Length: 211
Ligand SMILES: *Cc1c(COP(=O)(O)O)cnc(C)c1O
Image (cartoon, rainbow, N blue to C red):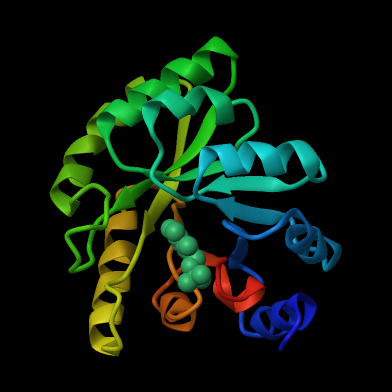
């Protein structure tokens, strides 16, 4: 079985300098994260708040924690003090709650707007139409910095369909200046980078299958 350091070295060799790699450590142990940290990785992504809080308490303080899962409004308060970037903001209500909690602690929280372009109904995110209509309203959220956009491609072997999704996400990112474009996971990150991704979120190719 390949080790975490050799997985990281292989993947890093395919990622250009201008693209940030977020190591998606959900369901993986503290020890596995520490191993990746010791290879020099500093960006880690989690999808459940309880799990993130436990890991954040235990692991080095200079880790940049990314939240990539569905975020419930009653959990926002717990992560706002330390989160580096919330990728998965998918409703106006969630934006308002993050803004309010950030204001209470005098912080400005970095977020990405999640957009739904994939075929699966089960995926979340703003529709392209919703995203466009949001744009004028964002300026009122003084404690949020909208840094870019996040999306996922349809889960399929059809490369044309994957490419269509990433192209659409890239096109939508142009509503924001200098947008971070968070797209690409273990199975599709080379296509995502080819289509303009600036941030990839990679889990199983680094850490192995999730427990
Ligand atoms: C789990 C997850 C990933 C990582 O997926 P892998 O296929 O394990 O690389 C990336 N993005 C999101 C939103 C995820 O939930």
